[in-house]
Length: 528
Image (cartoon, rainbow, N blue to C red; front, top):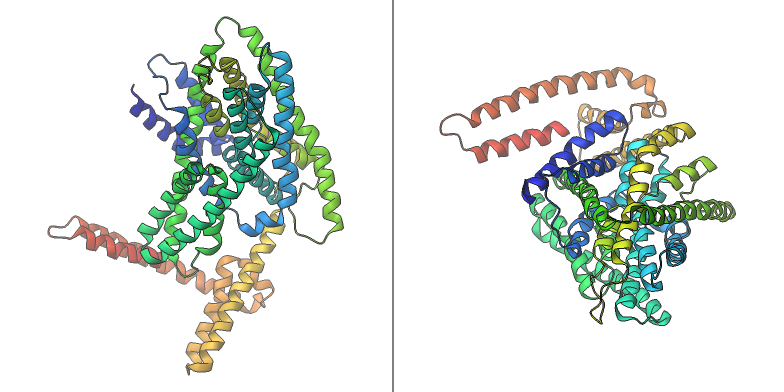
């Protein structure tokens, strides 16, 4: 098996792991990691040959962009304090604690190298957290916190990592210089992200084609990441800023085709890239194990100690931080997403899995320092990092569904349904307001006006069948049944039409492009 065949195996595994994970209630990223481990121990499977410095730029931008599409700028700004207390500050605390322990237990490990180890194992993985949280039906407030933590803690951790690596390589460290670099990295990233988001939004308006616009969204996160890194900014923060800007300002309510196609496209990208990323984690375990040859017991002890620090620090930090956030939340009339019970806090603690970013940072540690000697204790750092990744990702990932079920933490479906019903009511009322505006400038026959009024109500019913309780549902039950019957018959008619058009594609002299164009019109009509 060569490298290309291995890539196709991972892509296939990414697709298969989704239904298998749904069937057995296990997160797909964890299954892909296990697949990578199995492949790594097979003799005919080659070692992964990817330059470490390319792992983050190749995998992280599309994963971050796909994750941001599920959130909004308003949701982020409303939860700045919880995200800071439960994510950004926790990265500093975890880095410090891991560095102290590692420096104490690993003989000869320099402080700078210990800080680098702490920084690369500090951030929980945004992809794993989002994927796991989405599959377990957790309360929306927990999902919001995990998404915010996963999206923004990488920014802090990667900057700390680069500062520590630079200090280890050069042999010198300045606190003021490190703080300045952290601030400068954030400023450059935000400025670059906003500028690129604005430019991409203008370019999308010029393209005016769904295929080209979606293609541009695939390029934008890569361009944002690379340009920010070239200007010594945070590539991760630049991608987040660009994605949030586009999510806020590049959405056209009437551009149905681009929205539907873009949603499907990014679901596919997210599934495939996530699968490959976590498959690579399992495959890279082979290289990590090779470094421990000859002194397994000692290195496993070091790894276990750091795993304990990472897991314990997260729990010790989350308990008081959650309590403080709740106290501040109670004193202010604001809309924040915070854990509402100790059970939810425990679930959030156990969901702190490490993943793609930690692997890439561990493998990107330089081989030598400025004087030509080897990077101090590089093999030990890589092995400990992989121990943390495997323990948190596999152990916690496999047991998190059981823990959620045991604690009874579930999404508030009643609240979600109520919000959906409210949106349905608002949509129907907006349609009715627009109908009245049209009637003021156009003279509509009574029959047509009544028909359009029913259609306005039906807009809401299609979204939330319970909406009619507020809109005199009893008077409309008969019309709703008629609507369902009409939709069923219309669906069967459109199905017959699509079959006929597809049959024409194989007829002699048929132009496939014209057939596909007609078929697309029928497909769009079927969605209405």
